[in-house]
Image 1 (spheres, one colour):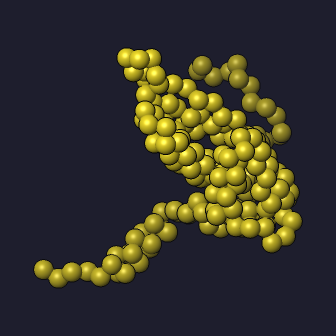
Image 2: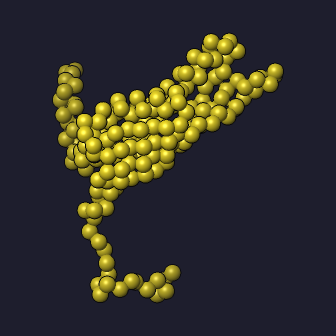
Length: 180
């Protein structure tokens, strides 16, 4: 049996996906909008720093002033499980990020994420588990914000290019008529 090189398979996959109208989310004019955006995150000090760092990895450091991405984080811990002594064994770190993109394409929204982690009895292990959960939460929130913004920007772009469908004579259709 003859093996097909990976590059040939990749090229074939690209041709097939381009024929069906597939367009990657992290490319095109939408991602270019985030190229020169200044990122500002407020909220829990440590999680804000981690989230801002994760966002800068995704959109890059601002080279100019195309706008500002302002994010406000709110966090809450929720115990999920308890030991026989009444100590929490699992904790959910709930994060709500409200964002506002200013500039040529203003956009705002909210992202809610949850990261669950075990709470070991040893103090240093607990600190490590919480730190790891905060890092994961920052990465997840950054990805969700970028996805949400790119989807919103694409939707704005397609709304601008979408033809208007207005009935002939600029009249609203009568909803009382018909088989409803």
